[in-house]
Length: 420
Length: 75
Image (cartoon, rainbow over the protein chains, first blue to last red):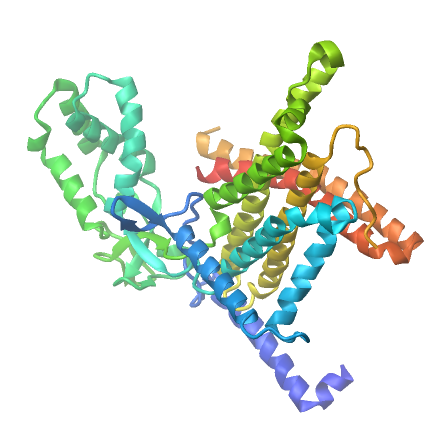
């Protein structure tokens, strides 16, 4: 402590860090409950499926797909830079790529039995999987990913949630016309989600209010009452003309306007007339989408089968899964069937391992940014970098291990040579 | 108990109980790896690499539980 107070530069840094800590705690979620919370925002809406950002023709472009292409472009660009002017004594980027190549070259040779001839067939896919997974993991935690986006208005929200409710209504009352089904589903939706909260925005940029208090429940946005909903239900029951119902009309127009209708005042700030909605981010890490991880897992497992068939022939490789019960015994047949299922479970395991790690990391970053706005996220960024690297390494290594197991013929039991 | 409360309880129990097994497994695995490195420091490289491989399988089970919890909460 003596050294701390004697050196003025160290003291200034220490005071700065403590000040930042206090500002973050007071400005974040904890402060918001005491009346401070000027740095805080509402906790973002976390959705497991990736969201649409654009339409190419009729194909919906997801925000994770955009990030996957971006990651691929970065990888291509970096690889091009590294191999432009190759020198015998490498330096900089070329050196980095040589380290990665040599590391995977040695590992692949070692795992496959010691000789380069046995191992080289695995090298291309294994190192590609490593590079791709690491790059898309790291690109997915850049600032702006998951935090900058557009506002999904109430109309779009209703549009997304109506089909599910409509299907349920259709099941219970198959005799309803489409208009009646839609009205009944709307009633159901408002009843169930009346207390759901949406974020109020100032114009189209900044959320209003402090922290979690910026949220407005649905029943203040779309004005409806018990009797109003009852009226609609009665009209549907009697088969009345729903277009003539003023209650339904007002609900529809409220949804279209998508602003706060009822009384909602927080700390003297009146929310009436402000736009409400949910944040849909423009960019989202590619590996936080199950589709991406499933695609990579399918490619890996398919290639493992191809390696097996190439090495052992169709009969030899098929003989691992379809065993003749008469010559080998029924237990061997059962084991063969289990191996077949094992291939499927390995694909799913690949998918969920990468998805779970990355999605949980994203939720962790969001939660920490919500709780401690300025500095809370710093140690978890470091964790995310580390986890991204390890998950890429694990994906590549497991593909290699499954490949080596696939090409090993049945009588070959010691197929692992020691590497150095 | 209404549906919302059961949802939260289900998600919490899923990840809570689901992390016990992998936690013990990873601890055992890392412990044995430390022992091996202590007995033979020259073999640190291969021991470390194989430990990471084993870690992946053990951790994947915890991730399955986490995915189920996320699906219960958000889908």
